[in-house]
Image (tube, rainbow, N blue to C red; front, side):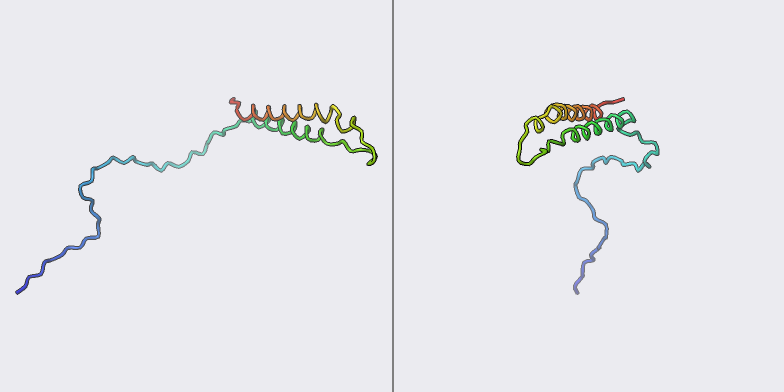
Length: 105
């Protein structure tokens, strides 16, 4: 006579000899309908002003076309508008953009 051992099969996994760790409870809160924006209206206005100055500087930098392809006139190519005024307007626009990004109202 042979006796068979009964084997119990469970579907639950059991953890043996593991320390219990307190888990952080996660709450599922609905996002609030009134979210605060990062930038205010003044920030956006400064960004717009900076972008307009950058575009104006780029437009000031255009030009320098020679009236005659056989001659070269350095006064047209190296005019103060192209070499001095336009880069200063662009740099001013970039500085205003940086101020607009970092300014808190």
